[in-house]
Image (cartoon, helix red, strand yellow):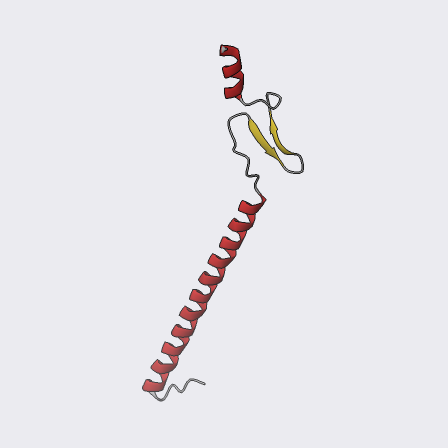
Length: 82
């Protein structure tokens, strides 16, 4: 494949191998970035769109639960002040 008797062809073959390796590396990076973006978008879609606060916990299969029984803390404070 490589003719070591001809320096021009040897360097041409080495340059072609290096360019092929660089192309494969770039292709792998693009495929990795696309895969990462797909995973991020899938996770965003699966996360609840309910605004979270300190007392809110997202439980898979159960939905959003609140430690204080379901009333946001701000609403409780407003009711107590009245």
